[in-house]
Length: 349
Ligand SMILES: NC(=O)c1ccc[n+]([C@@H]2O[C@H](COP(=O)([O-])OP(=O)(O)OC[C@H]3O[C@@H](n4cnc5c(N)ncnc54)[C@H](OP(=O)(O)O)[C@@H]3O)[C@@H](O)[C@H]2O)c1
Image 1: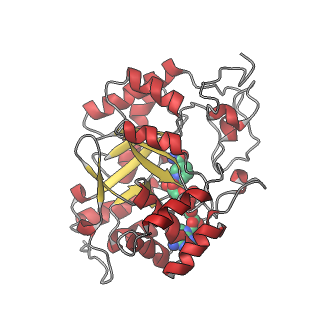
Image 2: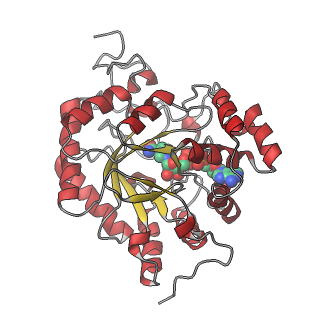
Image 3: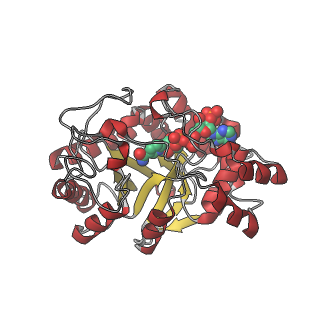
């Protein structure tokens, strides 16, 4: 058995700041994403997880649909058996949209636990609030005729199955992802166990001020995905109108002033604002600097204030593949007028 040994230039994980979940549990202020955007093989991503643990990461953001949990599980098992205490880790996974039926939620969680070679997860999320299956790697214009809008009663059945996972001791916390204020308001009215976190898209060009603040007000920790603007995201998630976060003048100006890569400006901003960024990279140089940057040389108050100016309302993960027959635009998924549209999409019902 190989002993788990930290790298000589590692960040001491005990010194990485944490945020407090409502249960009192702590989660590191930055994690490692594990969705390779179709660009990397599972083995390369698992290797990055191994390297990230050795440089001081303790929060790993996983999901069944990333199709790499088995490879990551082998890495986690080796690290734990090699002496890394399980309780130092914060491992999060997500139930995919083809497993929202209550029995499927339990089976999917057990499958993730089996693949990740763990006996509990620190957090388990409902990945999307729609039970609308689409094949992995499919094009953005693919539509499943069985797709449905958000149906609150159905979501709550899924949620109650998530709650049962906490009762069974299989997961410590549960959370939402890709929800909106109107959906969260309804969900919070009917939960027995509240969401501890909400995973949402957050980067300088998409700051989601209202939803972000709503989460804080409700004691829900916001986790920010695509924190540096997902520059290598799949083709299906690109449109000509998208902005590039790292090319924003304010981001570049601050990067030059601090002598750092623009990606690190995005991450410093995220952590200082209060969300937990989960940048993806398999490159050691990048994941080490991503972790280190949140420990040193903070942005000034003035720089933080000026970063508000990078907001472009630029949603990158639009989610078109979740649309149901009758819906017209990806905006139907995001409750943009403050209401949840029905089968006909906005303006039809
Ligand atoms: N809940 C959800 O629905 C959802 C949706 C999307 C993503 N996520 C999660 O969020 C994670 C991150 O999102 P993401 O992968 O879309 O976007 P991201 O982290 O913003 O972007 C990842 C890309 O940024 C580059 N990068 C990272 N650090 C860098 C650095 N220091 N310098 C230069 N480039 C850097 C990487 O390039 P290199 O490879 O060249 O380093 C990588 O390809 C995912 O892996 C996943 O865990 C969740």
